[in-house]
Image 1: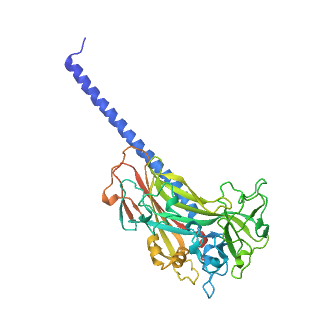
Image 2: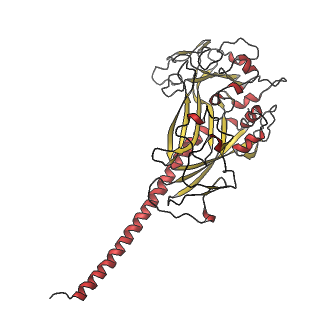
Image 3: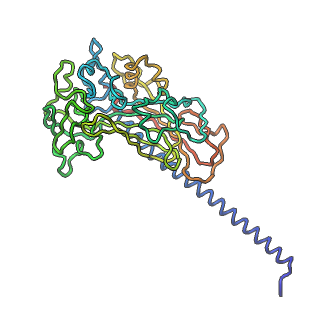
Length: 413
């Protein structure tokens, strides 16, 4: 028996209704899958970004046997005395007078940490994210050092995200067997299991030798060998390791009483990757032995980082002639901290008083599918009390915060 036209139409309607239900279930499942993927990727990238940032931030202040706050030890003439980080990138006279302003920005090892606040991102402010846009040096406070930082950043940083620069000595050390300037020797690094400090393939060719009285930072004058290196007054070095002065006694080290470390300079910032996705970048400075210039190279660390916010906790004792107490009772943005210093020396002193860093990240999904509507004003994401108004792009966003103690500075000296 055949079907009538009415029966056929009813069957078609029922089939379409069932098909619409299947499509709706499929669409909902697909949206839920995309959202779960975005959340998983978001959390994965956040963990990765936080891990690297925390690892480098915890190294701030590490200067071998002493921390960099030992630079605060001054005599009655306000000159550096004991337990010092001595830079061979200056002349002996400049070191004795603490004339650090002659140094190129990356080589300011007198400031183990230094931050730059993105304009409009202080706590309590509202940041309209919109489409990520590359900024200029003046979009941060203090302004980015143009020639020594902004010009070498590739890719360029985006607006609305803070920048932090760190300088520290690596945790890997090797014993200095003999100290006879212009050469110093150490255990053979070619043997199995040896600590690769001088001959590490990733070394920046910036090193430091020190004991518990002081630390000297310098550039290798020739490619370090397996058992020794040469440090002469050439390239970036404006002086050598020979002890010839009275105030400069920290440059004299005894055999088997000092250690060799790598000197690291890194910066973290947010920029657009080749796919146009905002990402966390880490820039690292290095040089070649005897060269007169530094080179900077950036690498993408975590995709989807849209903004990084930083606050700095400062010691209760901020007098340049007093040692830190280890009690952190004030928290500032980089902008506010910079404004407290009347001159370069005062600003450097305040940065040496930073004992903890509050870190906040805003991450978005990295896919191209709309999955999440823009939240209402009351539910906008906040990063260290900065209200973030995201673009209406459907991306899943979440904020992550952490407080990192600078363990090398926890108790002053």
